[in-house]
Length: 68
Image (cartoon, rainbow, N blue to C red; front, side, top):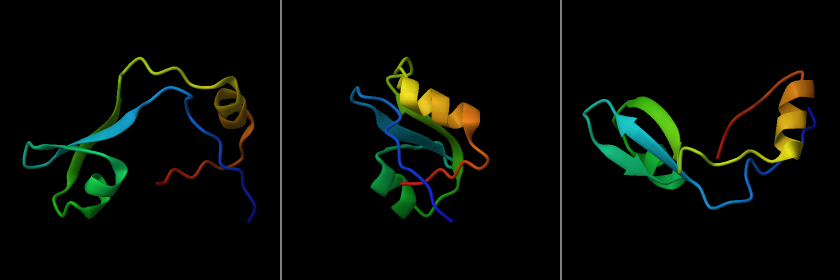
């Protein structure tokens, strides 16, 4: 399988998670290391703009893999 990694945004943004125990965890590494279940994921700021390249890639993709 071949793929391309495309930045989602050119502006500073952080991954945040609300955990099943009600805590909030910030950062990809911290979320991945936390042993409590993730209730929801979101980015901050919530109005971060996607790059045109990311939008085009999503629109034309056969498969999308999300990961750190």
